[in-house]
Length: 632
Image (cartoon, rainbow, N blue to C red; front, side, top):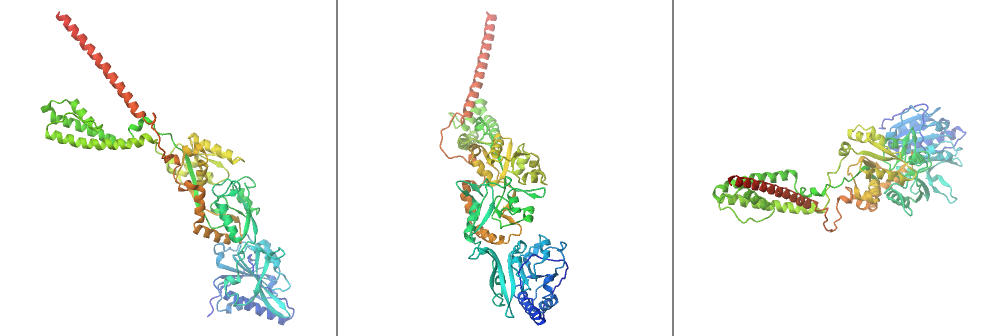
């Protein structure tokens, strides 16, 4: 039993898809009937055969109805045992934009456009109607459908075929063609209409046979790339143009047989954004059709996906933040850094508790003063031996335990002190976006047209919004080095954090001596997105690039090229100045400020004590002299 046939007849409808079936215009009624029956059978074979898994959109132009009655085609398709769902549009008048475009389901539909001449309403077709698979059927043998195939609107179809009838000595034979604009004939002309063979339901029984790949090779085509060389590691200039994305393009070019040209900057010196409804920069050059593709740092976002075609994504990255490393803590504090404040408090508490306990245990029997006991306790902390030890068992046990504890404390302190004395100690670094938002740092970025400043200023996230409110933009100078030098100077002054694409930011700092030594990059990124190449909307060869890019990504080549270009920077994390160089070096006065300051402090206190003792001694001598005088 034949499946249910879904039919919609609508006036003023049209779809820009193409596969042409040409049938001779025969004056005799018998010739016309013979052509109609032949066409009906061929269409039934196609719809019930290679297109049986597709939803069919049949668009019939009025110029075809005088030769091919629509009702007979519908009847033939309805009687087929393999008829898929059908949408039938009868094109009359102008294109109707009220018809909902099947953008989300375009890969599910196959369009069959039946014409007898070039449809006038094609000029009014909405830009959103772009079938992925198009079969144009030309029912008029006196009309050459080649100009129709050459229309840009028709060339948008990823899969495109033309079914055309040839009337040779009264015998109708149906010929199948495709269009390969990148392929050339011996005279150098583009093969816009390439013969595949006479119609045979066995030979063309699959969808791949009916719609062969149009862009198997690009035939030595030269693609024009809108690029900006200041985009390390994606694309940059040395003696030649290099970068990860250039390597991707070269690999694709070797596979598909194309070469490409590049530009150092966009035609308007901007990066690429939507301003007042107009695309600028690299994206603007592509949108206007001046360039075929752009391969710089562009993530897939709504506005770009709406107005451009984009390839399979090849990398994921966001925007990072760099800050100046705060100056190291004063060297005199090194003496206290081996232990945490809580541990220091515990040591002091142990001394304060142990000293009076030992004193209470031995004072009555051995006549030891509290000062002697305090010195005994302190000696164990600095690994000094004691000449006398209590003879009482309880006191000996407590002193022994204290000596063991003092030994452990002394060794732990000494081991950590060596590391602290030789490596600068820095305050706690800001390591998160939240921490940066809560700090007093302002944020700066070169104003080259990226979306980040506006996105931060309007963000619903309180921390991102706080950063956007403190954003200072650096004017985009025609010479990028001037702009980024100003940005780096703001960073090194220590009052600004700067933001840029993560890999570019790390490379910019690595290339600058001061940036290498005195800055670090947060691991956390914002607006992380998938990077892709962008092409004009409805570019039919985008899927070929998709396939090649996916293969490069899955093979690990893109990641390898990235790591080769970034080197140690690819690992992420703080800059090398936070990791130490591992070189042996002698200690300096700066390293040992703490001990010398402690010695100076001790000398000062000892001098005060000495002066105090001298003063007290003199006062005592004077008092004694007065007493002696009175007695005399």
